[in-house]
Every structure is written in structure tokens, then in C-alpha cells.
Image (cartoon, rainbow over all chains, first blue to last red; front, top):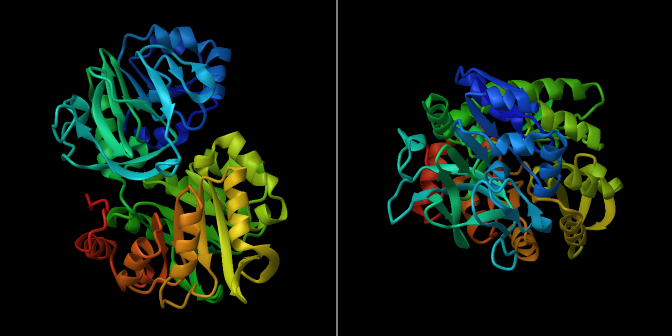
Length: 201
Length: 253
């Protein structure tokens, strides 16, 4: 059973629509006990880090999420919350990945970064080297909408995207994955990526 | 590099897609979920659903529609028309809309933009502005373009950005429905003025018009209705034309 974390910052309904479409076995839950029993975790999220972390803390989910050993996918804000701290009001996050999430500089680019952008692999490769990208054509566009980003930092960065600068659009460490884009909103390509996560063993 | 977005717009009345000139003379253009699904398959980058009747009775129909759309269409979509309260926004987002577009209600009570942006984030709040040339200025019109206000469109857009709107959906009332091209001067003026994305709307009649809006008008995205609804141009054909003219667009999968 995949548990999609239900908290105030989740755009969980659309993640749910996509998982339903894929025929995945999933539930929405904000109960730490369900997190402990899950085969996989998806942490969705839109909006601001501060209220999101407060909501996770209020529901007793911070500790539960830090202990997850099964495949764990953070989407959009869910990727950002995996890091140590967000520049957004210096909010402490889950600290599962090292580093600090920063805000785009609105004197350089329009903020938020809204729309379809490409994801490149590291070391000049055209595609992230990950089972999540199996069957995804190199150079595919994904849908982004965010004002904060995780800087590129090896070895955590698995994929990067250009928007005024290069930022981490896919991160990985052990059982953890994060995608800055919304696979549930990225058409058939995004569904393929989600399906790959669903089928990870 | 960020692609320019092509956004078909579905104006709806009583649960059907309609198209008219200057918001009157409405003709039936099909079922919203069916048309939306077709555009999704063809490679639309987003969809906008605008309930132009926006009556209290229509509200429940729209929430149901949003749910049906979210079930089958896996690209972002915006819903607009008669949205006046944070609670109404919550219902639409919860039903599966990615963004809401606010127009008249924001003019009547600008704090709505701030409240909605604080509650759900700027990224899901689109400020729709219907602008029309009056003398040497652009004035804001509300009520589906029927009611002139005292607001200067550029000043209003500045204020909307400051209140937390995440995007501007800018419709030229002079060009809407005419299919003679977007108001490029209006677009360029607004695009250079704000630091949030601007969606061009009103006047698209050909791929050349979309190209002009993106290049000369410096828009981040283009909204169009008639050219797609009546099969005049397909989305892949429009994208191919734009790509051949140096615009970065998302390919059709």
C-alpha cells in the first residue's frame, strides 16, 4: 500500500487521480502509524514550507517521515522538505538530505517558475540515470510551478533544470527520491514516471 | 529552458463550451470534458475553463466538472468565472483544479487576492484582467466585459502582483473574438512591467498571432479558443509553426 501523506500543503487530490488512473493501491493518510506500515510513501505539496512543516509537526509526522526506509517520493514542495532548511523564513525541514533550499531571484527571472521545462542528467547526460526515468524519452518536458529550489549538489542531484540558473529537479539518496516538477500534471510522461515509482521493488 | 505555453480556453455556459464575439452572440462549441480531453491528447500545455454565466446555480455544476476533468486530464488546468470567496476557491482546488482565476470579485474586493494567495499560495491564483482602450489608457472592465470601472489596467495589474497574484491572464476586450491578433502593445507594456508570468488572451486567429504575442508581446503563454475549437488549426500544427520560428515549445508526446 502506497501512503500519500495527507496534510494541509498537499495537492494530494491530483496525485490521487493519477494513482487511480494507474490502478495503484494507495491511500491518503496523515496518521504516523500508516506511515510506519506503508510499502511506499509519497509526500506531495504545494505552497509554503513554513505552514507545511508546521502541519507535519502538528500531525506527528516529522519523526515518522524521518524513519521511512521504504521507497519515498517527494513531489514539488515535498522535494524541498527533504532538505535541512528552507530559506523561506529559515524553516527547518526534514533534514533527510543535506543542504538549504533557496528562493529564485526575481530580479533575474520571473517568479514563480511556472510551466514546462526539461530535465537533464548529471555529468552532461541528457537523462537522469534512474529507474524512475525508464521509458521516458530524453529531453522530455515536465510541468513545474515553484518559487524555491534546491541547488545542484552532487551526489544528491540526479537531474537538473535550467531557469536562470541550474537547479536540482530530481534528487536521490538511498530509498529517497524527490522531483521538483509535478509528475501528476506532466501528461503521459509524468504518468510513466509515477508508474515507475509504483512498480519499484 | 522554459517552454512557452499554449493554452486552449473553454468558455462555458450552462455546462457547455460556447464561443462568442465580445462575450455576446454565443455559439455552442461542445462538451467541456470531451474537448478538454482532446486538447490534452493533442499536446495542450494547460487548459482554462471559464464559466461565463457564473451564476450561483452553476457553481455546483462547475465543481462537478472540475472533478471529471481532474479524473482524465493530467495537465494543469485553471477554473474561473464568478469566484468570489476563499471558500469557493478551496472547493475548486479540492475538486482538482490547479489554479483559479479571479476577475470581477478582485476588483470589488482586492483583499481577496491576498487572502487566497496566503491560504493556497500565489502559484494557484491567476488574476484575470479584461482591459479595453479608453482614450490613451487601458481601463479595467468587469462582469464579463460589460461593466467599465475607473481602474487603470496597468495600475490594477501592479496592485494585483503586490497582493500576491501568481500570474496575469490579460484579455484585450478590443481584440477578443475578432481573430485579428492580440493587442501587442498592451501585452508588451504589461510583460515588461511585472515580474510574474503573463498569459496573452483575446484576438488569436492564426499561428502568426500566437508567435507575435510571444515575441513582440513578450508573453509567457498564449490563450486561444476559436482557432482550436473549430478545428481551424490543430495544437501540434501550431506548435510546429512556433518551433520552426525559434520558440521553445513542449513537443507532443
